[in-house]
Length: 161
Image (cartoon, rainbow, N blue to C red):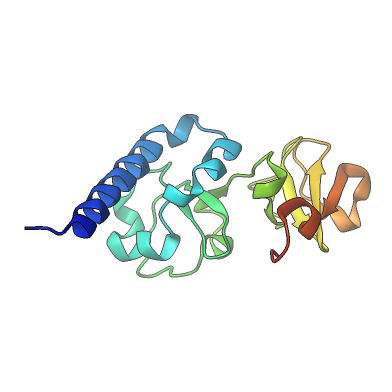
C-alpha cells in the first residue's frame, strides 16, 4: 500500500504527464508565447533523445533545448548520429519565440527561425522586443529593429541572467 506522500507524488506525475501529452497534441496550433507559458511541461531535449530517437518522432514534436529555447521538430533525423543540440541542427529544428518579456531567451540569429514583430529576446544584458517581422539582427547591433524594454534584472527579477 502506498503512503500518502507516494500517492500524491504518483498523482502529480500522472497529471504532469497528461498535461505534457496534451501540449504535444496541440503544439502545431500553439504560438511561441503559449508554448513558453507551458514550458515546465515540455520535455527537455536530452530526455527526449534518451526516450526515443528523433527518427521515431513526427514533425511538430516540441521540446526544450539545454539553453532553454522551445523548439519544434521540422524533420525527423537520426539523433544517434547527429547528437548536437537544436541550436547546432537548425535544419531539423524550428525555434519559437515568446511575446512575453519574462519568457525571453538569449538572442540567436537563425534565418530559418526569425523573430517576428513583438517577439522578445535577451541581448547585451537587456530584454528587447522586435519591431519588425523576419528579424534576424542582434538587438545590440540593430537597435532600430528592436525596442529596449529594460535590463534582464528589471524585467525578470533579481538573480536571473
